[in-house]
Length: 448
Image (cartoon, rainbow, N blue to C red; front, side, top):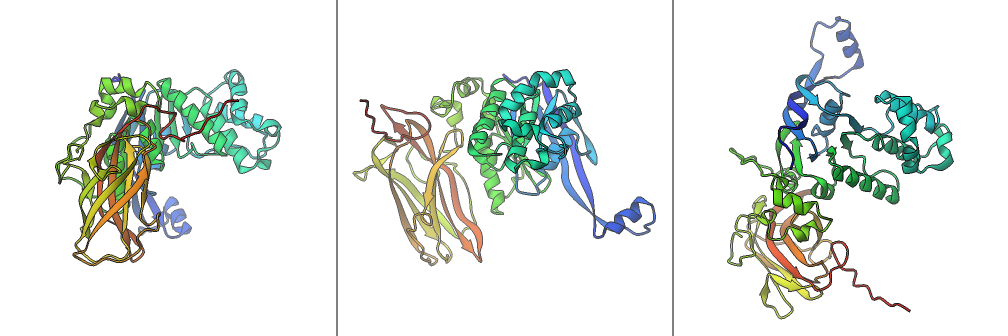
């Protein structure tokens, strides 16, 4: 279990303020002391950020573009200096921020490996020991002996990533750098990332890929407009982040700290077993969701996380089997229906009805909506009530899943959430044949 006293990164009251000038000459005049008037306005990129990353944790930072995520990583790695506050780092860092920064375009790949390796503190002998692993990972062949300026963008990032990832750091810091190169190289990057996690490395990374945040992170930190909104389980922070994205986040006056999922020793053990941890966690504390609000099925969430602009309300939701009976458990391979009843309090042009299915770690597995299905494109009036039915075959593996519902639309070309209910319904899938991954390909096998 992670020792709370063993802090790898300690960010204390960090503020970063920039001076923004309208003209470059104003910057020069101030630097030379020739300006008598203030020719700039101040911009807070980060405002009083506190954050502790414990050794062995994987922590994700999420937020909208311009929220200060990359600025925070650059301060942690020493690329930028905070205006106020302190950062303490205990351990050797490898940072994947701007891949290839520091490369000399006239040098070949080998020369750049040695140059950059020495820049981050390695001796020539230490680089020599790692160079084969770096070249194997980059896999750019004889191009490594050519000037970097002749590389394609794909080869350039492969070499830069291979160099950064193969220096055996204690702390790995990544800024949107896992999805580089072609699909095969991306798979190699994620495999290396998982290796680091299994080795107990401390990992801090920024990503807009919320599935990666859910899958890999012990904790998530949400930053918006330079302010830390909260930190806690990835699932909880992602749900709040989705509110921020549509401009409907309303902070609580007295927010309750979110419990870190992996602080529970039993859950930590289960989560480490294999990629099927979502099945293993059934019945554990990880599935203690805020479960119904309106009806009486025990698979419904009485405190489902919800928000919207009050244009519509999801007043009922449930599942039925092929015979039309309400169910919460079904056999894999059978046909079932997901239902939702929506009442409109205001007129709406072409509302979109949706559902998504997540596993209990918060990873979105599948879902659809009426816009994707081209099933309903009409307008509605205040007072209208619509019953929406999604019929499909259950091909997910046996296990526990959570269903979320949504009613959205576009108002003057702006995407707007009318009402969303997260993790409102539980589905238990029973299976006598599970395959690899999340769902069954229903393969027909012949052996001759």
